[in-house]
Image 1 (tube, rainbow, N blue to C red):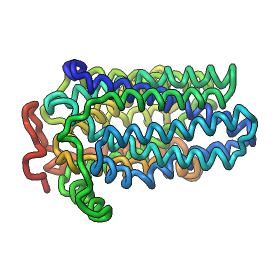
Image 2: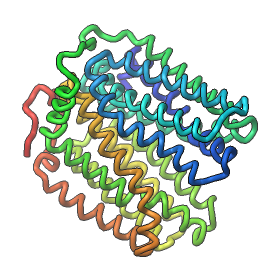
Image 3: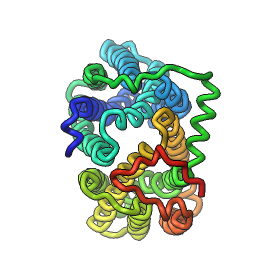
Image 4: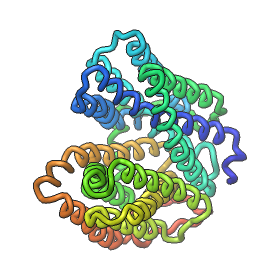
Length: 411
């Protein structure tokens, strides 16, 4: 765990883990806050959509800003903005002054603020650790995320149940404040300090060029985005329905989701040590295996079998995310990295809400089992097609290789 020797990286890891703790706490608080105000599940969905849509629509701006200015300061600014959003929301709920439209507006503001954080974080990691430690650094970030998941959910549920949603959101504001303080303590190298060199549209266009000129970057991004739409989202929309009617209820689904979380944590742990010589072939193989979860759900298989498949799915996604982000960080020029990350985040996130929205209607129209089987078949077939792309199939990266200094792959 060599990256942990770097003080700056330890501060970044701590900040991100604490931030994720609030990230997984907040949805529970927001959901119950809306339900307390209106009792409407539709209104709850709108509140979450406000956050997601605002984040997606602002990501490219966040990418440009993070490439123009010190990424540490961009992340601090994002955290401070979210301190204001969550504090305002929490106070309004505690005092009884909140209206549902207040929550919609504040959710949108929070989503927009968060859009600046992730691209800046992706670009900051290579500035804090050597190139040969990037995979370990990203694996540690993944571990922090998946450790925070159950803790955040448990803390959020406990506070909402015992004190109230408003207090839970004030605690969330505290996690953002703590993250900002930790990030402020990072001693950013002088080489990382940049100023704007051209206009916004030109930098956005330059980022798009950097995103598309390396074929494996955009091919894998589009593939994963479609995976969210066709395979991933239907599992998490239709899975609870199957669990309720055929697997024994919410407890069964909780077991399946927990298994996926444990698998994701395991993926981060394995990524600390395992460096495949042909990374995209390995990642694609793991994604192919995720088809088993859809097939077992469609067959109403025993919960233990579905949970085992969910563990593998979580492992594959987490491990693959670490490998992919490490590859991008080394393949893309540092001054363009946040913009490329923003394009990748935007493409992936744009498809996920659509997948959630369409899963129910399509499942009703063609049959839940048939739709899940189609998602499984799709991931297997498209994996074969993706591996047929030379820059994906033949990509190799040695630990001492600096890809960003070499010409981009174009085939």
